[in-house]
Image (cartoon, rainbow, N blue to C red; front, side):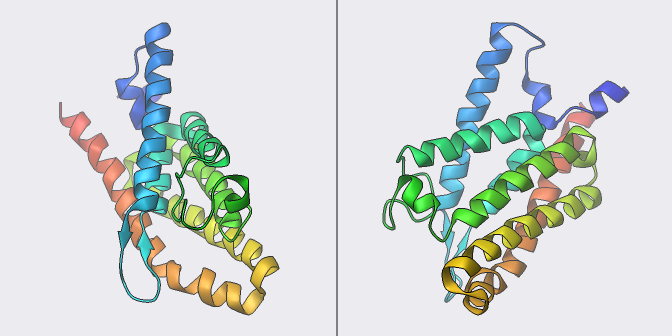
Length: 196
């Protein structure tokens, strides 16, 4: 495999080399990614006092599969859909929509997801997405960014103790498991293509 192939994200295997078809496919992938993010945000696993949502799993997997540029474009499109009032987030429309929802208790997590997408996508562009250990390490940093910014934002709204107790502690183990799943999935797909 050439060095040029090693520096491309997984999604590059589906893209035409150039022309209108390439841009159409990029647009289709971005819209499809926002649909996947919405579905993951709405998918709930009931575990007790705090439900587990699959949003972070989708954020990390899309970033690893799409790379930094398309991953960021997809996530920013998802945020734009939410800002325009589409019910794409976890608790919309039940707990509000649009900018008001985004500036509520979820705001810090959303900002952290932008940074996590950039980091994981950057790593995927450099070949980390072929090795589950390397990818998992980067995804752990991505999870830490999401939780850190979520905590910081919640601390300004609820206070440090409540932000830690309700905004970080219940999610750490679940987010590490989601990172492990995403870090296993993308290299597995690469391995399937390598066998062809």
